[in-house]
Length: 169
Image (tube, rainbow, N blue to C red):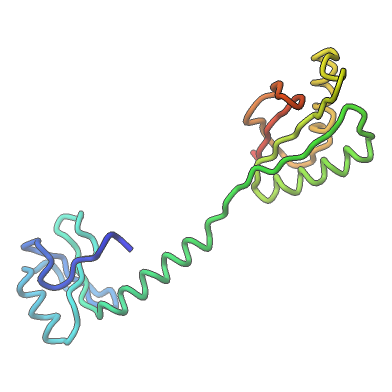
């Protein structure tokens, strides 16, 4: 909900664009006249859009207004999807079939909207191999990824080896 909607006598504006509960426009009128109209119907005057010129107010039950707003927020929250950073690790000697399986997993994650960090794990004296050779080993798995992707962080050296971060285009 927007901070806290002003209702009835809390509304400060002199003139308001007034709507009914069903959305019908009653027009621009003074706050006192709109409040009088709301009270005569046994409802509340709720300031919907205080930033508009003139501000917009709706004549409706305040409890129903709060209920509708919470429903809108829950619906919006349920539609948002949090993208995670997934991670996968390969080694210099990983076979083609294993690379294909890992590339398929990366493709699935990318199609779900996640970012993926692919690590080329180097142990012992493998860390001192030619840099171009190691980057080629990392590129091997990227060639097998079937989903369209872009690299968000280029290939860089990390304490464990080389890493690259990709996400869906």
